Length: 301
Image (cartoon, rainbow, N blue to C red; front, side, top):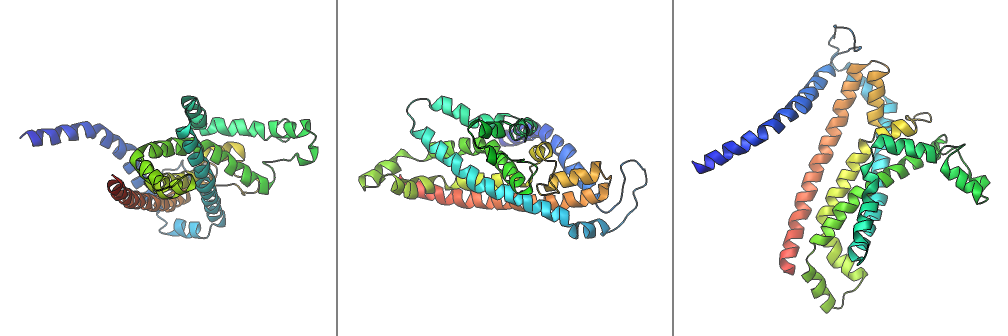
């Protein structure tokens, strides 16, 4: 009886959250799937069925698949650069005896701002006429290096990737710091008795002990790269010539600029399936690495 009442209480507490998820996630996604087989201009009450025409269009839309490549590039750059910087900062702060609270705040600060604020801020920094970057280059006598950073396709892609890295390293920093604090001290003491120092301790103790966190952060960073929107929209709006466009921005333009809601819905379904696939990979990696790490920890104890 007591067990049944606890289960009932749990469902009562979960009910509001489940209702919100169903209303604002499941229902819209179902409507999006239905709309992907129709054509609609956003105004007319007529939504004729077009079968797989929208999906055929998406499969041959080179701009959409080009935006997918850009998103994967941003995600991979964040995966390598942001995670490496985050881990180094987390290990440094963990070892710091003074000022650790200050550095935790400073390193996490980028994640506090909204993507729109970050986009506006870096638009000013990288402005070719009054931007901080070009003004600093001019002040130190490097006028020849001044550049239209967001107007050149090559530098625009790098600039967006750099902003993405700066914005996301705080998130990775917090998780890596928590992961480092979770590694048992006994393992370091035992490795010290065996003569391990520095790199050897990192390779055989720190890295295995943080492997589950590393897997989770890596997949989440890749997912964030695929879903990037606000920063790109404010910085470049997908330009120049679509070189920085991402799927979320392309879907937005199809729906709210060209009023092709059916095509936008088909793109969203395909894009959503890619994200679900990555989420499944995330769960598999976190469970596998988490289980192996727990077994190593038990052996260390």
